[in-house]
Image (cartoon, rainbow, N blue to C red; front, side, top):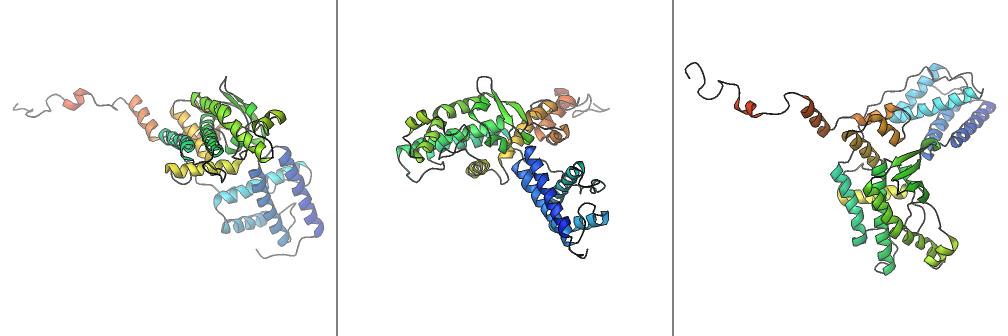
Length: 365
């Protein structure tokens, strides 16, 4: 599509104002930083294209929108195109509710179909290897430590980080948490006695998830012997006097998981820690914190959990989102076949064969 005359300044200003209000609404609704970043990229690119082609953003024609989709398709994959269109649909729904546009011009356009990929899942044995690798850090000095290697403080921090990393993996796998949920956990959100954790998920919606025995034990060890060491690091860095300063001033932060400086461990830090462990264990590329969430859901279903129970624990609004985990694993397929098919197992009679079919059988004996 050839570029038309530039859009009028008033129209461009109105588009920017509407976009600003839209992002304010998303933030107020509790949208994640990733969603905000994705929507901002998609919407700003679209509005730039509309302005460059002299179109009215309030009522673009279907032909114009198809031309924009063609432009998107030239440099992006189907997943990206779908994300950009989702941002535009959300924007136009907002402007329609606000009376800024007469309707959603994208309502009649279909989203490109995406290939349905099964999520990457660890086996139970691989998950255990990941936990063992995290535990071994405290003995081998594999943590992210300060330069003063070999000192007593250095060794204590290494052990604290090992306790923390084991607790991170156990918690993520036991409760099926998103990485953002894991990073936002506080000390008060965990109830070890009841084996529960309160999670703030997408849209600031809270839900409860459960912790098994190993996760509770790992968290108890970390809270007792690991986190206090990391908290003391923050106080020391600020010019305090170790644990005495902690007692006087109170905890530096109520974040559950801390880094080697005693600050909250964020999403990037969590990704970095798991990547180091992945390499140490020799797991394939692509294993991420979200892989533990996928593994949680798949292993729950393999163990016979109801799909709606898994939906509740994962915090999915729609059951259709949870159904991606109903892909049949080879182990579950074989177990179901063996339990259900009347001829799935071999009996002694099967080995002998039908009467008269053995060696020497026949009319002549």
